[in-house]
Amino acid sequence: MEYTTRLGSLADYDKGKVIPIDDDPKNYVFSNIFEVASQSAPYERVAVAKNFEYVIEVARAEGSSDWYSATHDEFVLSMDGVVEVQFVKLDDPAAVAPPESQGAVKLAGEPAGRKMGRVVLSRGHQGLLPRGAAYRFIAHAPACLMIQTVEGPETVQKWAEICQNS
Amino acid sequence: MAMSETAHQAAASNLPLVMRTEIGAIDNVTGYRTFSAGSFSFARDEYFARITWPEGTHTMPVDAFLRAMMRDVAWGFFYGTVNFDDVIGTVNHYGEVTLFAGRYNDAYHNAGRDREERFPSEVLMPLFKAIMSDWTNQGFDPFAAPMETGAPWGSKNGHNESAITRTRVSAKRIVGLPGDTPLRTDANGFPVNRMFPDLDQSTPIVEPEPGFEGEVWAYNLFDYLSRSDVTWNPSVCSVVGESLFCPTTEEFALPIDHGNDRCEWFITLSDEIDWDIKDKETGKPRAKVITRAGDVSCMPADIRHKGYAKKRAMLLVWENGSPIIPELILKGEAPIVSVTW
Image 1 (tube, rainbow over the protein chains, first blue to last red):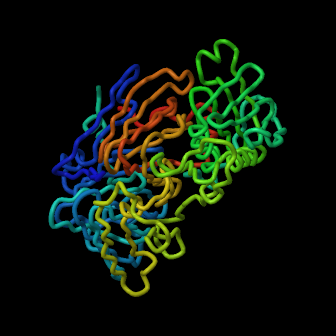
Image 2 (cartoon, rainbow over the protein chains, first blue to last red):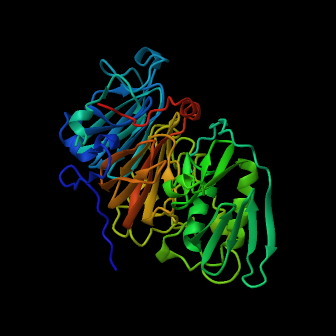
Image 3 (tube, rainbow over the protein chains, first blue to last red):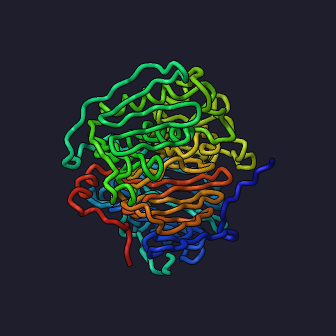
C-alpha cells in the first residue's frame, strides 16, 4: 500500500472540529494555525496555545519583519513556505529586552551588534532563536510560522476570534 | 517522556504507603512469573493479563496491557493518571504513585468494588519493569505499531530487552545542536518509516558566522519525526524554560487513556488524529475531537483522552513541566482549562 502524508498549508488545509457529547467546545480552545495565519496581519504574533506564562504563537511571514529579541531562547517552525532568519549578536541586549522581561520584544530600529549568520527554513524545519540575539524574518512568498516562546508584549490574544465557540 | 527532571515530590492522598512487592515463581505451564504489589496480583497466560485484588478481578488482552504498561514505565508514571483501560491504572504523585483498580470507573467505585494503594515510586517501578521484562516475548515491541511488530501471544518465548529499555529522548535545548540529542539518520539506525515516503527530507540552510556555530542552528523536524521507530511516545525536541515541545508519531491507538493532571496541548502536524474524551473521574464520554494538519486543541485537566490514527501522523504534544504545578494541583489552584474568553 502506498501512503500519502497530508500536510496543511495557507492555501490548503482541512480543519477538524470538536464534537461535544456532554461538554462545552470552548474547553478545547480549538483552532487551526493556517486559518489563524491567513486571517492575521503579516508578522502579527497570535497566540494559539497558552500554558501559564508560556505560549505558542502563529504568524504569517510575508516580506521583511521587524527585528525581535528575547531574554530566553525561542524556537520557530515553518509549517508552510520558506523563510530566512537573520541574526545579530546584540552589543547590549539588556537595552533591548530588560533582564526581567519575557517574550519577544520588538526593536525600535536596526540592531547594534555583530552579524551571527542566517538560516533558511522550509516546511518542517525548526530553528533556534537564541537568547540575547536579535532576529528578523524575510519571506518572499507568504509562509506560516509557529513560535515556541513566552507571552510578551508582541503576543496577540484573540481567542474568541480564532477558536471554535460552539 | 516529557517529565521535567525538576518535577518534585508532591504529597499524595492519605492512603498509607505500601512497601511490599514480590516477584513470584515461574508457572510450570506458561513459563511466566506472577507478581504482586500490595494486595494486587498480576498473572499472564498465553493471551491475557489478569489483575486481581481483594474486591475483584480484571482481564486485559496481554498486548494492550504490555503497550499500556510500557508507556507508564517509559514515562516515569507520566503526568496525572495513566488508565491502562477503564479499570486499571496509576496516578502519579511525583515521588509516590497510586495503583488502582476501578477507582475511576463509576460502576466499580459506586459498588465499593474498587481499590487503590499508594507506593513509593521507587518501589513500584522496579516491579513494573520486571513484569515488562518477563512478559515481553522475543519479537514483540510494545512501542511499535501493530503492523510493525511480532505477536505477544503464547507461552514464554525469550525476551526483547532492547525494545523495552529504550533511552528516552530528551533534548536539553534543541535536537541536533552540538552536545544535545542527535539527529536521526539511516546511518545511526533510523530509516524513514514506511508511512512517510513522501516527506521532504531536505536540510535547512544554516550559515553561522565564525564563533556562532552553537547558536545559529536549524534542522528538519519533520524528517526527524518520520524516522521515529516508536509510536505514541513523545520526546522533548526543544525547550523554553519549562515549556517542552514533545513531538511524536502516532499510529493505531494510544495504548492508554491519559488523564492528565494539567492542561496539555496538541498540535496535529500531519494527517488526522481523532480523540475520544471522557470524564477523568467517572469515565463518562464528554466529546470527540477530530484533528487534522494545523489543528490546535487543549486537553482540559479534568478529562481522560485516547487517540486514534489510521495513518501514521505527526503530533506535537506541548507540555508545561513546571515543578510548581503539582502543588497548585493539590491546592486546587491549577486551571482546568488553559484559556477562557
